[in-house]
Image (cartoon, rainbow, N blue to C red; front, side):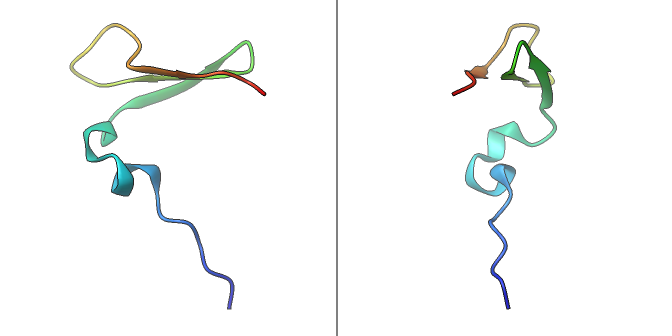
Length: 44
């Protein structure tokens, strides 16, 4: 049986309910209570 990775929200609870979007191959994370990006994961 293949083990599934745990969801990101299990590891970082404050991201629960956050919005995730992709812009120019980067992942942008914005929490519900914020209008600015909380995290940007650049493309490799």
